[in-house]
Image 1 (spheres, one colour):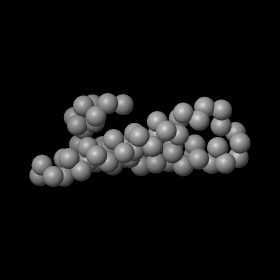
Image 2 (cartoon, one colour):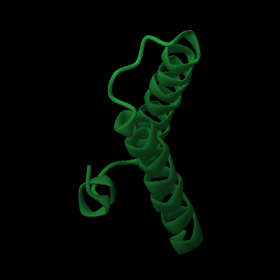
Image 3 (tube, rainbow, N blue to C red):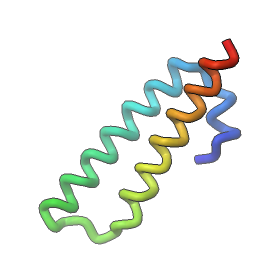
Length: 64
């Protein structure tokens, strides 16, 4: 996911996507805790995607 793609979305779409990403991040943490996860790089990707969406939401909020 790229920030330029996110900037074309509305605040409501971004908040929906943020909710989904947080759920994915939670599920990945639970899998890791239970020893089921084989691809640990997905946790890092999910964390960065959440930060990216939050950053774009803040940028849009500052613009007005």
